[in-house]
Amino acid sequence: MSGKAITNSLLHQQNRAQNKSKRKQSQIEEKNKAKNMLGNLQSHSTHKTIQALGLSTLFFLLLISLNYLCLLVKAHIFIYAGCSQEKYASNSPFEGKLNYFLASVVSSSSQASYNTYAIGNGSSTPPEGTIYGLFQCRGDLQTADCSRCMESAVNQIGLVCPYSYGASLQLEGCYLRYEHANFLGTLDTSLRFKKCGKSVNNDVEFFRRRDDVLADLQAAIGFKVSSSGLVEGFAQCLGDLSSSDCSSCLGDAVGKMKSLCGSAAAADVFLGQCYARYWASGYYVEFSPDSSDEDDIGKTVAITVGVLAGLAFFIVLLSFCQKAME
Image 1: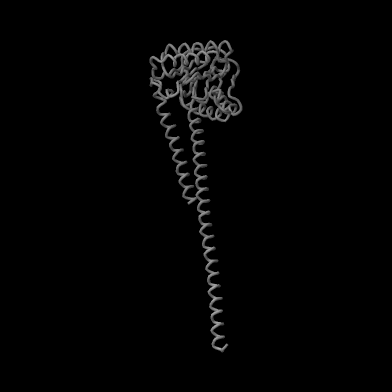
Image 2: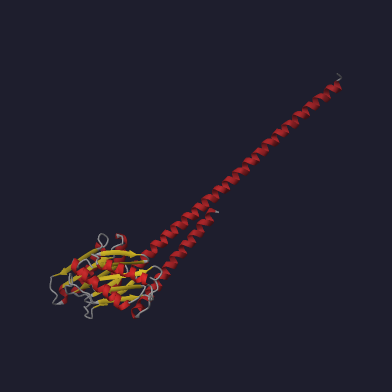
């Protein structure tokens, strides 16, 4: 073989080796590109999954928070108040005892849902002698919610009944009362507050269910919840009543409920030492207004604004977290 032929053969082999090396390098690059694309897809998918999980968690927490907020707001809703016409002087001995009583209520409500007090020398003459009082939370409230409700009641009672020798305040979730005369354990069935819903006409099944619930509530001792079909209700006596007095009080409450609210789809009746309530699903919020509602309107508006402000805060937080994850 000539020298020229040998040279051509070597060049051909060199070109084949270079082409083979290029093809191998190209294959490696294609594999790396595919890996990078797969990695990007997996990363994007993981990011979206985390984002979705994050949003789901935030929505879940939002729902829980709003539900809890609504429960707390409802417990603080004003029902009624009663104030003594007798007034004490500022910086009087009675005011000092009253402040001590109110502070004791706040402290005690963090541990118990009911308590009674007699603060002073046992004399009601002059009125500065003794303060008698009690507080009670609704039977289904947790201790922390009871304490918050009582704090709200303590803050409100001095505003609603300034310098009064006696006052009572009923919120949705708790009750507070004090007097200069001993009222503890004495049955009081005077009507303090009523509220009647819209009438239900020609619904035999509803009235049968309602009467079943009211009969059950009338036999309550302390706090009781009852339901029959779509009708629900609950009732409670103050803790200073005996079992027989509680039954008597609730009997009067149920009787007044039927006579005053008739065929109402929902009704509240609060007497001096007990209350009863019933409602049919879908009707509870449809109470007819009465003259006692004017003070409620401002409070309800303020509460609603507070709830909406809380909702707006959570929406802003949710939006911020979503942008951060993007």
